Image 1 (cartoon, rainbow, N blue to C red):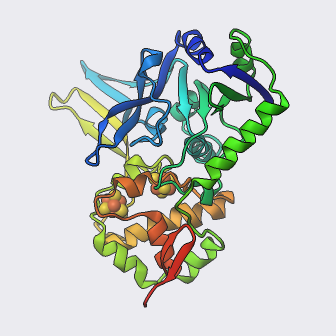
Image 2: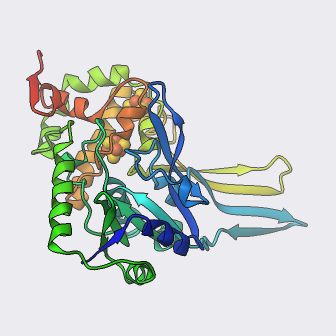
Image 3: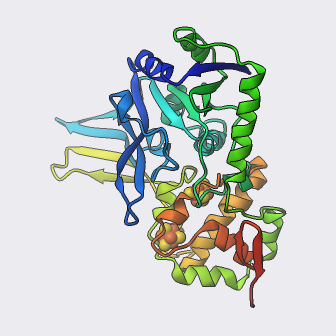
Length: 357
Ligand code: SF4
Ligand code: SF4
């Protein structure tokens, strides 16, 4: 790893160098009902549009590599002949400015399934290859529990990772392209003072986490607690709306549908993201639904995140971003569900309570 330090105003110069490509970054979208800023990733056209002081975004960067809907193929019939066209996914490079460690870790996890498994997804791989990622150290919000999931820092999957040291940035460089871009702005090697400051800032960040999830032996505990009444308790609240999967940076389940246009001369094969919480997720040919209850579907989502994926890849599929809990209209949050399954009412920093039952 190569480290560099540069003055804050140099970041705008770096942006200008990179902005010959499409740039995506965190932008303010408005305020929520508590008058708190709402941020989301969007295409930006000026450095001033970037809200780099954001705590979290409503949606994750996932939607730029896994669009909600995508035509896999288009069929046309013309004078008794039919033609199939497929999207070659010749996307251009996209610069992602200010991605937090949890979201970079989320993309690294998606890679394991969508790029490195036996069934790679070509459109995803092309988009990932075209990404240039500038990561940014964050200030945890109350919903974040990435520290518990081991995803509050990241070792790979970015080109450059920045930590705000007040009047300057501390840059961790992990690609030749990033190194070459930094040669074009004023930067220097860090001295011992910069390194101590970096360590102090990261220690301060660690101390700011207020939500904690006990993940010790969680995979085994889920096996033991398959029939826990906690699943029914939370399942009764669940609206089966699928919002949690929509905002989650690591939910990748999808469906494929084929449709014929009304003129009977065009047809489409479309892939769309789906959620295991939706009522018909486990419905199969013949009409049988293997998970007809909201509680069984909610349980399945937790088992996929914290058990099935761990069995396959030795790590959880949850990065602890807290988006699902923040977006859930029923108030279902992973820290509370996991604490309940473990027999504890809450798992908020430093005060766990046993459940009454
Ligand atoms: S857990 Fe919440 S967001 Fe997810 S499906 Fe249920 S009600 Fe919707
Ligand atoms: S399950 Fe919830 S907390 Fe975990 S990565 Fe997905 S949205 Fe974030």
